[in-house]
Amino acid sequence: MSQGGASELQDRIRRAERVAVLTGAGVSAESGVPTFRGTDGLWRQYRAEDLATPEAFRRDPRLVWEWYDWRRQLVATCQPNPAHRAIAALERDAPEFLLITQNVDGLHRKAGSVRLVELHGNLWRVRCVRDERTTENLEAPLQDIPPRCTCGGLLRPDVVWFGEALPAEPLRQAFDAAQSCEVFLVVGTSAVVHPAASLPGVAREHDAYVVEVNLEPTPLTSIAHESHHGKAGEILPRLLSTSPSPQPPTPNPRRSPCSP
Ligand code: OAD
Image (cartoon, rainbow, N blue to C red; front, side, top):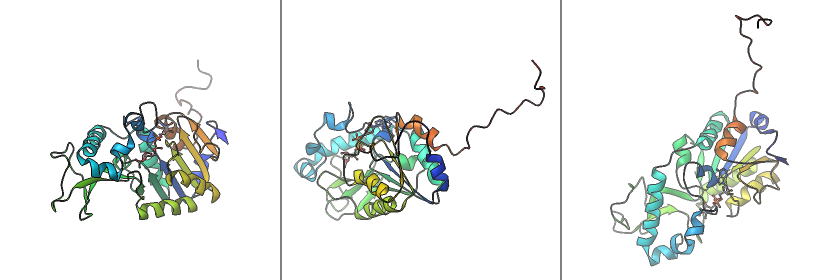
C-alpha cells in the first residue's frame, strides 16, 4: 500500500475500460459544505434522531424542514471545488464510468458530472408523502414551512433518512460498477455508513485497483492499494491530471546553449 507517494493511478486509468468513483462529504468540504463527523460535523452539533429519521418527520415536520431549509440555503451559496471538477474531467475521458456519491448537495452535477448515482438522495428534490410524486428544484429559501404538494400532502426532502432503505436502482448500479470496474477511487468518506462503505471492499475483491484520498486514515486505508492523505481539492487535480508527465523545458531557439 502506497501512502501518498508515487502513484500508479494515472497509468491504471489510461488502461482501464471501467472506472468508478465513490465520494463522501469530504469532497465538498473545501466548497464550504459541512461534513458529518469532523470537528465541526453536523452530527457533532445535531442529533440525527431529531432531524433525519421518518419518526422525527412524523413528530415535527416543521423542525425537520427548518433544518433542511437551512442546509439548502447554505449549499445554495457553495460552488464546486477543484476536486469536483477533477472527477468530472475523469468521467469525460473514461469509456465506462460511474460516480457514486453519498452527497446530497448536487455539487457534482454542478461541476459537470453526468454519469452519477446519488445513493442518499438530493437536497433539491422533494417527495410528496401522500402520492410519492417527486419534484425537483423546490425554491430555497422555502416560502412555507413545511411545504405542501398540490394534492395537499406534506412534501419531504428526497433524501435517505436513518432507518430507510437506499433507492434500489442506484444501489444496484453502484454494486455493479464496484464488481466490474478496474479502478475504484474513494474520496472524502469516513467509510462507516453501509452499504456505501462496503463498495470499495467489493471492488477490491473483484480485482479493482483501489485508491483512497482523505484527510486522514479510515477503515478503507488498509484495503486500498494507494492512500493519499490531504485535501481532495489539492490532491485530486494532481493525481488525476491527464496530461503526460512533465516534459523537459524546451530550449529557447534564440539562445545558443552556450549563451550566458
Ligand atoms: P463524514 O462526515 O462521515 O466523513 C467525511 C470524511 O471526509 C472524513 O473521513 C474526513 O476525514 C474527510 N475529509 C474532510 N475534509 C476533506 C477534504 N478537504 N479532503 C479530503 N477528505 C476530507 O461523511 P460521509 O462519509 O460522507 O448519510 O458520511 C456518510 C453518510 O453519513 C452521509 O451521506 C450521511 C451521514 O449520516 C445520510 O444522511 C443518510
